[in-house]
Image (cartoon, rainbow, N blue to C red; front, side):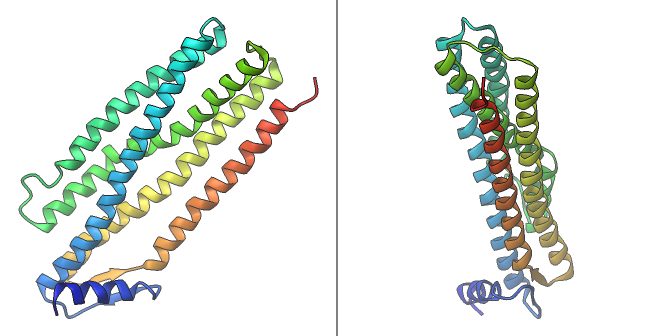
Length: 240
């Protein structure tokens, strides 16, 4: 069986909830496992790129707040704190992306390559997940800071305002962490499954679980968006 034919067989098998391909030669098994490994790796790199891009965008927003509204104490604290944390996040994400690009350096076997990726997912990429979740909180902080300054010229927070804002930030962090951690665990399990399949000289693929993981992420994001919208309505359009 040629590689393209083997790949087509694997792709066609995704229409079933779970597929197990047996009686493969080592070369055929390696080809399929490399395909699965590369798919997870591409998503991992995309996640790091997303983290860098989002944090750079937010960093620009934090700097704009410092320049435009720095005379306001709350705006100064929000902008400066955000800028410091975002710079650290960008530097860390760039370093992790550099490491991700060199994961295969010196690897002499598929097993070693898989083990390198699993190790990276358990340590470096876990912090990238936290960084992505943190971005959601900064979107709210910087967005609300800009809105209040444009509308009122300054920020004055009473007890109710503080409760609403803290709740919104906690929600942003919680939903972001839950959503991205589940996706991280799903891809880590896929890499570990590849390593197990290599040991057992067979391959399994559960497309249903992958679809379920995507659906869960969309649901978490939708719930977070709805809750954040309600909080913003209660906060920004409340009667004075």
